[in-house]
Length: 447
Image (cartoon, rainbow, N blue to C red; front, side):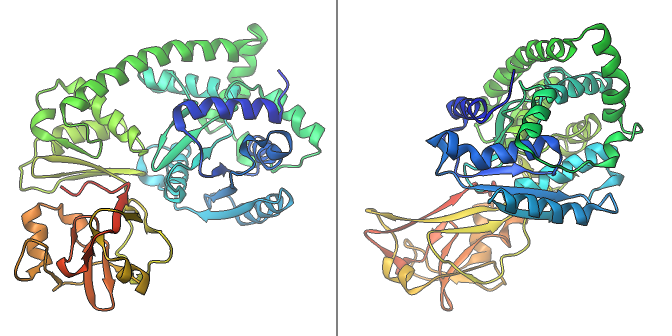
């Protein structure tokens, strides 16, 4: 199969059945052959197919800091993106080599955690994985003792934070990608670590797969079929997880402890993994998952146990098991709310202001200018059904807001006057009909 903009566009259209229309294309851009070809095709897509001419593109390069030339690669990637006439951003990350997962997995976790934080609502994060990558992943996961989801290999489309992670090149051979790059006159970066056979994936790529291919030339396609069969088994586990999640209240971010403990250990693990994936968070190792079952779930209701790993964390508060990003944004520094949306930071979602015919925040107050900030202590607010003001601290305790979110709640002010606490409460003297509703998109679990 040759590779072209038309083939890529058709695959993207197919993904819309699951992911809907993309807000932006966010390309995971390493500067290597595969991501360079993907980025080039996307940059020229509107010339061949008008269906995506209005979708902005941004290439994001992750600097893992693990190679002495990594800063230079970022500069070269910036130049390549400029030649493609698309937006570019380079993000340095701190790879947790002490995670116990090994350098490859640790780098991957750091990379996806950084990309997760950059996504807006309904963005598509596009990755350039191809058919040989799928074969390598299946073999690696078999060697690691993975279950059906691991043997299913790389999925083509799935939820990822507020957006979607899509891989439109999984059915494309690397030879076709190379041919496209040659025909288009593209240049790309060669990471010398890709030849280092100390890394498991490189060992498979350079030592094992060539030998398998010499015996079975279509080995990548065969492994892809096996991944498809495992994917069916994995889909059945997903169906079971959905059934269990619905019985638990259908809240991915908060699973009730009393309901979880009614399930077998295997079903507990299954529903926790599923809920984490639905939230776009990284899944734990078997050891970390066992710690959740043995330390967090059976902990005292008044305890505050925590298990974390790169890309996610799990906490308990009262009867809830909370699934969270590994790091929530620090406290919100006072900032003006310009426009209709305000990004609150990693793991905290977005505030959106929308006109409504019902009661809401006074339009006059909104037009006069709002400031968003976190708690500093001592805040008071009078709610609509109250005669007197109440301490915000007391309201949060009575409402049962989880401790780690109490200081991260976005508070909306007009000058020194507290008007709203996230989407929880409005001050009585700030309400008007019609008004402006406050929607907290991708809000972390608060209760």
